[in-house]
Amino acid sequence: MTNPQMTDEFQPRPWMSSVLKAAGVYNLVWGVCVVLFPAATLRLLGYSAPLAFPQLWQCIGMMVGVYGVGYWVSAWDPYRHWPIVLVGLLGKILGPIGFLLNILAGDLPASMGWTILTNDLVWWIPFGMILWGAVRHHAAMQSAYAGQTPLDDPFRELPGTTGRSLAELSCERPQLVVLLRHAGCTFCRESLGDLRRDRASIESAGMGIVLVHVGEEGDIAELISGYGLGDLPRISDPGGRLYRQFGLELGRFSQLFGAKVWLRGFRSSLVDGHGFGAIRGNPLQMPGAFVVHQGRCLRGFQHESAGDRPDYLRLVRATSESEPAVVV
Image 1 (cartoon, one colour):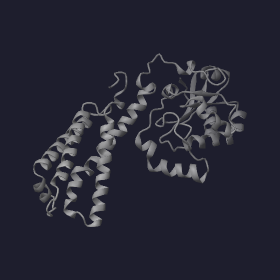
Image 2: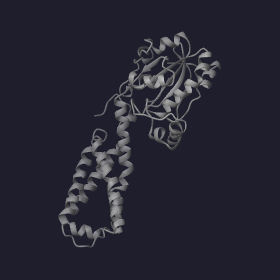
Image 3: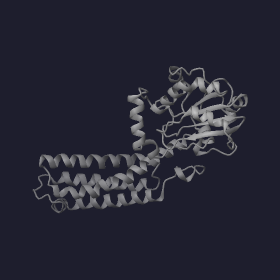
Image 4: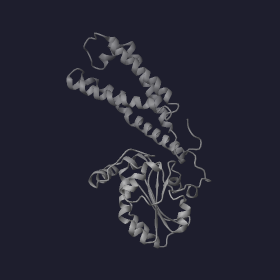
């Protein structure tokens, strides 16, 4: 069910319903033809050998037709009925694999390949996009993106491990606020390693460090302590309220899984030794880093991709320059 408070970004697109209806009609027509005319449809596909058990081919037709009913139903709410789309996509991936194995074994003629194109391959991209949209929709429903109002004030409401909010900490002295991804992310661990390296220089510049994360406190405390940063104030923000406050959105597919992200992830996890772990928290949340003082954001770094690596020390030093401040 759609949420009226959620932005259009996380709602199903009109083309998704059209695609699923088209898939439903196609499957129903294909299934009915196979059930009623098993021998004729096989000859049309280039399979000329006599059928010992035409009922098996008709059974396949019935299964395909049933999928058509499922697609038609899911078209009315693609994100709610994502399991139907997922099962359909799996079938459309496994079908060509089975066909290829039978071609190599010489059990099926290559002329039947065109049906793989229309039955399976043409649906991969739209079905995949629908499933990705459903993932983002679910993540948004579990966070502040579903219903955060202008009156929401996590800057002053969310307490950290010290018992003080970010607003209180920023009134004492400027704070470098690092909003991390989930604890299992290699880039989150890389950020902690960079902060461990630069901590002395950051604090000697008169600035504190506050860590914000999307998991529960117990999910990341051990990891942070392992990097020698266990004494830093931390704020647990599973709902993404502070992230939203700083303008950090849920990542798009290219921002989370693009080629640059994979290459950087390989280097961070394996070459640099940061590794990775289980997902704990919203895996779609984009990270960021901001310098905050007395309720104002003086400087910030917003990631273009999850694999971006901010220079925290440079960000801190840049606050001495004259920059417009933004009220948080």
